[in-house]
Image 1 (cartoon, helix red, strand yellow):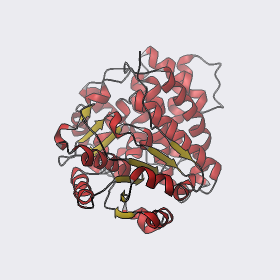
Image 2 (cartoon, helix red, strand yellow):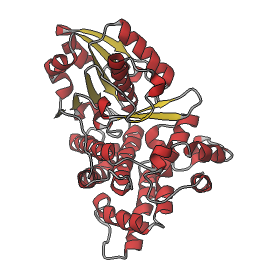
Image 3 (cartoon, rainbow, N blue to C red):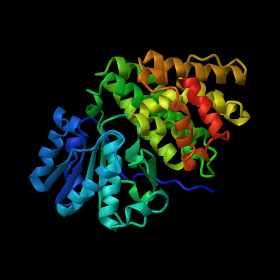
Image 4 (cartoon, rainbow, N blue to C red):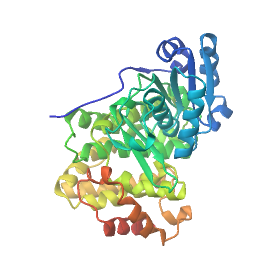
Length: 385
């Protein structure tokens, strides 16, 4: 037995972000509350969409979303949306903007106390209508029932509920064309982590649909990430990355991620390192730790050729698994991403604090193929430092 939830409608194609204005208005109503960040508004990326929406609706833009959005930002957005008498919410941007949009739509519709939302299936609903438009190829947030918020004490907390899946997701590859190479790289690795962890998750809801989607995601991502990073205007590579990110999102939305994410969260929460980069930093060491487990080793060896199609699969399972992990580590270097904590000015003494914080991510750690203790987390951080 398993459950599989996903966004009910999805539109993909170049220019769809501003060519779908009528559908957006039909879903969201007359008072559209748009949630994004200052960088995107300054780039003018939002303008074509807003211009068309304003013809037949009232639009208010909230662009104060930061990377790893805070509870304070969520509450500010909620208050402004309530005052605007919002009929529907449009999240436009990376995972941070979409995560805030999900919870604002939920709070507007349900007026539920925010402190009762955290965790799995604690949202009561309903929510107001919600449309999401991603501008990065990484989080897959447009098709996941998850929102992550950073608390005042820097701990990251999540809301996981099918209620926050949007009514419509619009994937427009043209929006990702001007994404800087470092963001393209880190968000691309993030999407690969989603697919790898979804495939190998020991969550009871791991299922054949998620496994299939993980494989297809890794085919697209593995074959396109270098081109997307170094030839940013290659629309085919950008399209493959956006599709791959979405497929990986659908996969882990139903077969939840595990220790890579659990250990990445303290890096982002404590040191303001982007989520994708945090994942890429700990990915190889977590996979090395997990590969002691026979089933994990077998799964990593199975996935390896889908990411790196030149791998020699005539070798032993152990050899292929080890090569897979080494190639993932080298991929981050090839993409010019930092690969050591010290390169980001994170002190060695922080390894213990991060290990303590990682242990709080029980909803993720429970899905890992191999049990991780605090001492294991500490050793992984030390290896990455």
